[in-house]
Length: 99
Image (cartoon, rainbow, N blue to C red; front, side):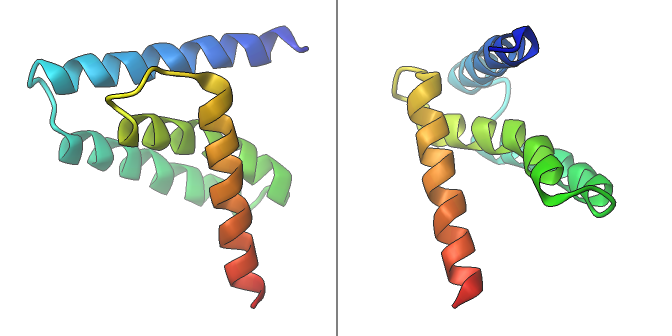
């Protein structure tokens, strides 16, 4: 596996854990975290118009990961389970768009 992928995995888990702590201690609430992720997604969307679909998905993946981790705030952070859920959601969205 590419070392950069492993570094990204660790970084995403760390950011998700930080979001969880900020939420727990009242530094940020879910709405504020979602707003930050919305801003990130808007920035990503502007960039992705010039990229192939696979690259656009790669840019959006960390944002989707953090959103899914936020939804599961009470659960243990498990990278593989979160990735599987993101894939299922993406596949469901794609199926809806093709109908």
